[in-house]
Length: 358
Image (cartoon, rainbow, N blue to C red; front, side, top):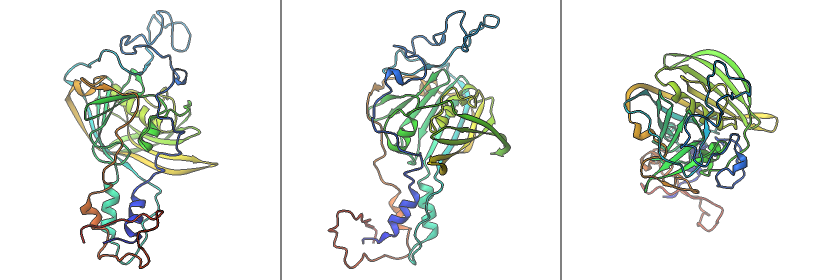
């Protein structure tokens, strides 16, 4: 039976098309050479640690202190060179996390609606993910449930010594470089479009506690929006905390050099607000729901590029399946709702939801 607007209202409340902020200009192209904030190299993985610095150079242009060279992370460009595999049996942490959609209008209340069913559908729309953070600097984000445009089975890989990320998806196994400034378009619209980035302003915030761990808040603000990061010190995460932090600040267009992204400082929550004229409007939130220490992270899961993966210069694994399980959708109402008497399915601008369980 065709439902009236109840189902559509509930799904509209569960979906948050503006959760990732204002839409970037569509290009679906990788970053041009002059769009990067760091030098481009033909094969960034072939020259792993010097970061383009000479033997007597320092990041800030001054003299070296006691001859110590601090390597600058290199930009990822595709196709990648010979894979670098981190040491086997790595120590790290595994996080379970979700995207929480905030500031979404509530569902329309009608006599046939069931609040428990509406709540269950809304929770099913929170994208669930698993993050593996290696003490040596690797990060892997596996998409487990829809919540962004990326479908389950896809993954994002990052390294503390590389700017940008690698998107991986099957079948067949493919990868695409996601340069700095493209994460918001990727997660929000399924396109790799590079938006302008800036250094942003950072403000320390209050102390707190999440998952039984002490946290400190840092606000990173740019013309695009702001994110409040709640960071916990986890030595087991080590350098793997850095790419996760960079992923979150990239969503507001902040440079990967953001001071908030430090070794062992793991974001347990990131709350976003987007620029809308002179105001800030609520966006989504990243929230870690559990964490586990690991002593045997698989190095193959963190290698760049993934073994046997084919390089892609366009496309992304967009989510095209169902919004929520049919069983949950059937629980949205307590009784069938008849369609409007004048609805003959002839108006192209009208979207009709069909419940095949009646």
